[in-house]
Length: 74
View 1 (spheres, rainbow, N blue to C red):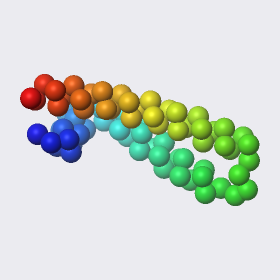
View 2 (view 1 turned 30 degrees about the vertical axis):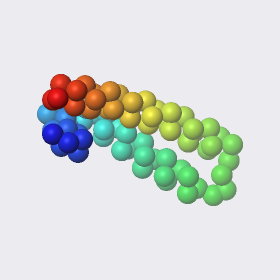
View 3 (view 1 turned 90 degrees about the vertical axis):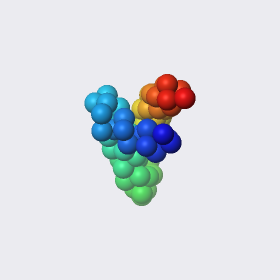
């Protein structure tokens, strides 16, 4: 099972993983929207930074779970 298949399987079968992926994708869209805002303010930069950290948190959770599944499949 390759990485993409593992991600698809987790998304379909693991409610926590689905929640993490959905939130990660939502944050990605929010960040992109805020980064287009002009003029960029200091408060906006701080908000973007906060959202990026949260997005990274979810990415790390997903990556850990992906690696667990891939390790178990070997």
